[in-house]
Structure formats: structure tokens, C-alpha cells
Length: 197
Image (cartoon, rainbow, N blue to C red; front, top):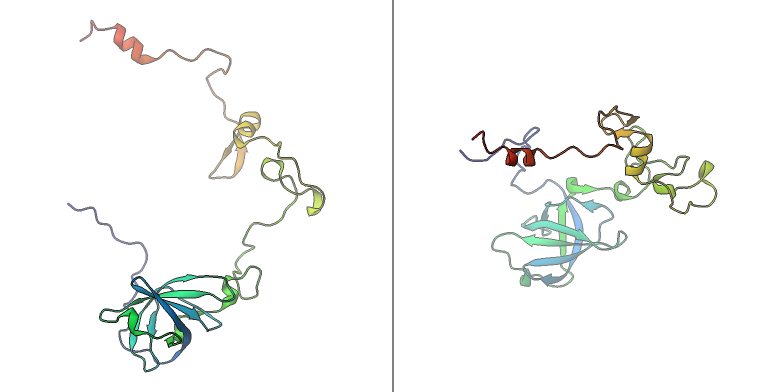
């Protein structure tokens, strides 16, 4: 039997193959690079990965492959459809995208309205030392520590172990005494008793 597995979650319906109802300008061709096309984004919104890219007449020319560059003037690469040659595009040629395949830039900016909402998400700036004594002091003011805090292993040995599933410190009773000598290895006992075989 093969090692295939069923995916989790609901299957997405296939994307319609026809041209979209509405397209808007996405960017201008800069130059070809290997078997892809580098395009400078001129739209204020961010495109989805693998979004279909079109000419002005809604003819599909490929799919968006990668987004790169600074956030205020980023570029993307276009993986051309079969039969489309990257050398056939002239510098400055305008490319278009389905307007439903664009996201607002605020979604990618920290602490921007319309960004990640949710229930008190993220790591806050709380009080206390933080990991290894490098955090800020009371009320987020003061000098940083010198990093001489205990490692997680030393803290667990000193205070008890941290249980990942609950996030609480617990001390566990061990039958082993730390000062006692380590138990003898069983493998040596088996080697000594060759008579049993």
C-alpha cells in the first residue's frame, strides 16, 4: 500500500479558469530572470501568492511566484504560463491581477489598524526579568539585566520542572536519589550470565 494521506480540513473548490470579472493594474515589467519575470509592483495593495496575472485584455500570462524587496516598493516574480516566453515582455509593460486577489498593506504592518485583532494576541511587554535576565525592569523602565539569569535547565532543577501542557511549575517526587551512585547497567549482567542460553 502507498503512503498517501488525506489532507485535513475542507477541500477548496477549484479556482475558476475563465477571466476574472474585474482586474486592476498590479505592476510593470522590469526584466527577465532565468525562466521567470521580475515585476515592480505599482499597486498599493499586496497580491496573493500564486494569483493569476493578466494582460490588460484579461489574457492570463502566468502566476505570481514570489514577493521580495522593501515593504514600500516591493517586487514580485511571475512564473509564466505554458507557451509564454519571458523574453517577449518589454520593460515597462503593465500587468494586471484579479482585484479579489489583493490584500491591504496594513495587514502586514505591526500595530496597524485592521491588522491582527483577536483576543489579546501577541507577546506583551510585561514586568519581570524575562528569559535569562535580559528583560526590562519594573513597569518597562530601567536598565537591562546582565544576562546572568539561570538557564531553563538550572531553573527546572532548582524550582521544579515546567510542564509544557499546563505551563505551570511542578515538582515531581523521584525515587532516584541524586547523591546515590548511578544504577548498574543491565547489559553487563546479561553478559555475565551466559549459562541461561
